[in-house]
Image (cartoon, rainbow, N blue to C red; front, side, top):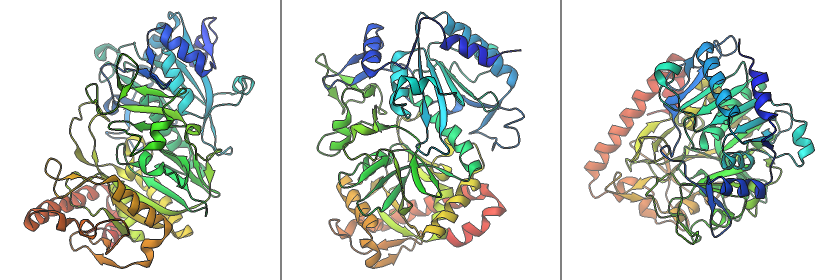
Length: 524
């Protein structure tokens, strides 16, 4: 029988294992070991090799007495046996024991002290340890870190390649989650995002059982305590739109909503950097300095980053601590939301740039989670692909979708929240014909939705999708508000829009009879 705890303790307590290193020490180790280089801003730049995005098909949950009756098993939450997990865990820990150096970080997930998860990360790579240190919530002292009794442990061995025929994996890459042993085992991939999203999945399992809604969203708050949430998948604008110089940033990707309000699950941000510029996104641009880590960003011989270069991947990334944003809210907690924004990057180019949703429509669109999977965020995705990602985050939801949807619906009612659907995708035609939404226009629309200005104006009903579209928004050309007006051919628009509408209807059938009332009241 495998003694998981003893094997982890063996790795952590090796004489050559480095614990709770400072940023300077981790940077020095990464450069010394040839894992990364410094840019001219002081940020650390690493390349992740073959895998420049997550590998969702290689993620499995151990089917055991704890998980069996609770997990929503299927294509997202694939089961693996305890035996396969144990054998691979034994092989990986043996492999790591032979490494000259290992790196350990103890920290937390969740800024709410009542539901905070104590965690430990054991890394083969020093830059991965810096990634974890930056991404999760950091103890203030080494003494505090030493007192942490990990409730979950990540063991990451990127250079260990699995043999599918021998190890029972889908490929050489594996992300195994054991809820009973409280271990996340990662190997075969150097992509740092696997660690981040694995812990998010754990929080999506733990928080709802404590009556707390976990959410794949960014969040910010204004001086009037007007909290706004931004739901959406990677690349839809969560990080960009929540980084507003006029509002405090609570967090850019993962949050919980409890009886007191909203809290960040993380201690850092993980921003896409493709086409990043100081002019368009100054807060993110300036956050990339010493203490930040760049993934797969092309740099020249002088360490200058070229954010327009996608030769390694379009999914170039920066991870940086929250306090690199001047107006970050520390600790990252705030009150109850006044506004919710659902972000979708519509590759069909048929959804309005902004529309107001009723409570029933909000439930429908939350369960639908329509967007386009953007290039690079997952292996094999090279052009935008229309997808329906339940609750705008189905790859990270271990429980049934209705658990999260019902909690959100109750909270919308309880706190009288306004909900908007915002299309950050294409206008004037589908992908390849139209163009991407103007970021400045999207910012104007979002700011006026959050301020309450849109509530004072007039709306018209969209005939195709039944959405309420504002007739005018300050700073936004009126002609772009109704998408049919931006197409050269109304017939072409109607054909494409009807096709998307049919996909919505077909997709919603998977939720069964228990969600039929939502489809009837909030659907098409």
